[in-house]
Length: 82
Image 1 (tube, rainbow, N blue to C red):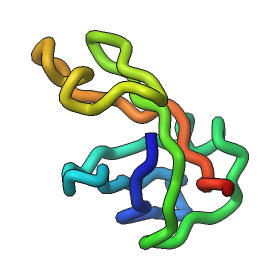
Image 2 (cartoon, rainbow, N blue to C red):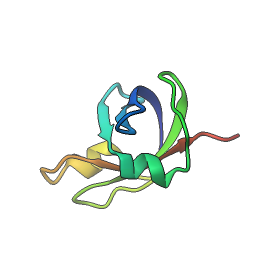
Image 3 (tube, rainbow, N blue to C red):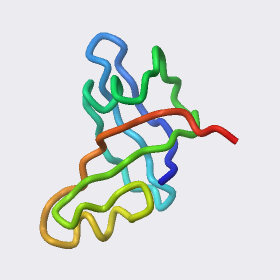
Image 4 (tube, rainbow, N blue to C red):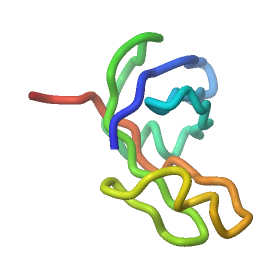
């Protein structure tokens, strides 16, 4: 799934992304580290993997992940490559 980097704190290596529907979803240092990035700038397009109660993944959507009452969780953030 693709999103747009919204916030990033280099001290904690955490931040948030905006899904294409405008929904902000936070990510932690583990998700950032899993993507192998060194820096992230707001506005960059990123590929994310979401996990949630229904195990929505890279091809799922956030509504499916949140549908069972839980919040989606980003487990990987990396740059979009063409």
